[in-house]
Image 1 (cartoon, rainbow, N blue to C red):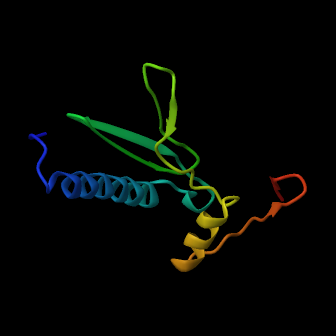
Image 2: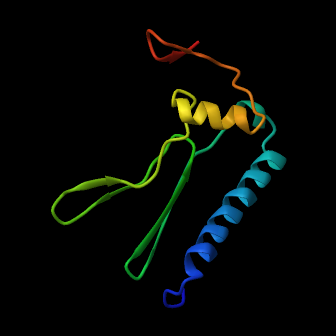
Length: 107
């Protein structure tokens, strides 16, 4: 990538977004049982002193510095996370399996 400029963030975000959409469409079009299947992905890109991190599914990116300080860079996309459940519903999706609040298991 080129040196950082004010448009770099937008370029990287667009590139990552387009990549995830492309993989999603290929998965949807080529996996026979795609309604009962899924995937997870985490990607990070280091550009100079900037770190870009993205994820989908039950995965996350973390950064551990030389002092062993841990920084979580992404959020998991899981239906047991209330904000994710709401995001799915707000986008017109539905959740077919419910978590048992006592056991935190699907059922």
